[in-house]
Image (cartoon, rainbow, N blue to C red; front, side, top):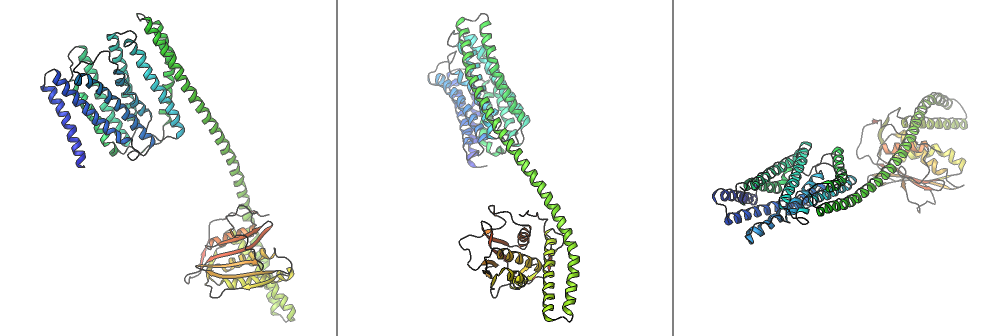
Amino acid sequence: MPARDKLWIVGLTSLITAQVTVSLLMREGAPLTIVSDLIQGTLLLIATAAFLPNCLPSWTPQRRSRGFWILMSLGMLFWLSYQGMWNYFEVLRHEDVPNPFLGDIVLFLHLVPMMAALALLPHLGEDDRDARLRMLDFALLLIWWVFLYVYAVIPWQTVHVNEPAYSNNFNVTYLTEKLVLLMALGMLTYQSHGGWRFLYANLLGASALYASSSYVANYAIAHQTYYSGSIYDIPLMFSMAWLAILGKFAARFHVNDSRPSQPLLGVWITRLSMLALFSLPWFALYAQVERDCPPAVKNLRSTLSLVAMIVMGTLVFLRQRLLGGELASLLEKSRGSFENLKTLQSQLIQSEKLASLGQLVGGAAHEINNPLTAMLGYSDLLNASALPPSEQMLAERIAAQVRRTRTLVASLLTFVRQSPARLSGIDVNSVIQTALRLLMPQFEVQAVAVQLELGSGIPPVLADSNQLLHVCLHLAGQVSNRQEERSALRVRTWQNGNLVLTEFNRVAGSAELPFHHLQDTKTTKPTSLSLGACCRIVEEHGGRILAQSGQDGYLAFRLELPAATKSTSPLSFSGHPSRAVAGS
């Protein structure tokens, strides 16, 4: 424990010891009254000073917990102010405190902020909407407590002075207030957990000690055995010291953690505020039917009841208006959630359709493989036979196209995850040259010239050769379909850091348009099924496809793949099932 805290505890213990000593050893009189009042005032000052640092954001980051300490500190300040008034008469003026005493309202009100602090329920998590409603409930309860004091006590102090009636009504209302505080602390102690339960339990103990000592002191006053500084003040001093210790070491109780909100407690606070409003007409009726009550007191109480009804009714109107706004907001959010649910349902249906389509494609691909195998075998037989050279060339072209078709079928099977991919070190330049040889008949028909710019010293990439060939075939075909008559297709490869880049573009280029990640674009039309498969294949290889898109299609593609940093053995992989993209 720091030396400053030890010094603080020593000072607090010294004050309690001094009070016990003077209460037991000194006789009734002015010296005892002055010493006792000074000790009590100092002790209350220390307790209030111990509460104030908890109001700082650096000590209490949570707003509702900070509001709890602000209200508790306000209650301690009221109590300290009342003690200061008491010391003014007994210490400075050496006079007895007058009875009735206007400062009694400060003593009554010092418990009101404390009850409001408990009503904040700082140990529970709550949103801003509930906090605004709770503040209106607090305001209703605060106004009702002030009304209760003014209704029961003030008339006998100002309108029709009656010391016995004043003292009796004040003691009854103050005792009721303390009982309500104790019940609230008991309920919160039962409901809370952890550090908050420890704090509430100690507040309950200190408040119970204070309430019992006040009751005993009032009993002694009624029997004319009480005097300032008597032994009846010793329990009161202990309750003040208890509160001072709570305020000083509250940061060590770990009370900044809040639990989930419990709507039941908030409902009961709202019910109590409504009950307070409904009680006002009965107070007005009681003021008129009460016997042996001066007319001036009756009129004042009826007027107070009417004014309180107007003020509290206005707060209830504001509360209902706030509730109406919150209800409209919730309805709007519910409508939006329903629309989102419908959209999600449509997407799920579409996903199921695409999944079924993927299964159909997989089955069809298996069936297509059988005749392709036969066609490839017959073309090889024709190529091996004694045919003229021109016919052998045609047989070779047939075999090449069949192999290309088998590659496409294999890519479809990979797309629907029915065959594993084999990864190995692949030379991108070789794959590009193979793809262009397969596309050459198509380029001749379209009158598309090819400019090949292959970079030298390009490292291999870790990929599946068949899948990479499919990607290159499709990207080159997409760009060639956009070529004007007698135009040229430029294909170039180069290395950029740890990436191997391949670009399919027109000779004229389209540098004025930026490349965008094909999977991230939201402005272009949906990709075809084959292009979606290409994107998925490249992403599984750790790369990506960039595209330049125009009004009616894609103008250029850039394929980025990571270079293989070391030799790797063939590796098979099977990714997660992908979702096919519906094409136009």
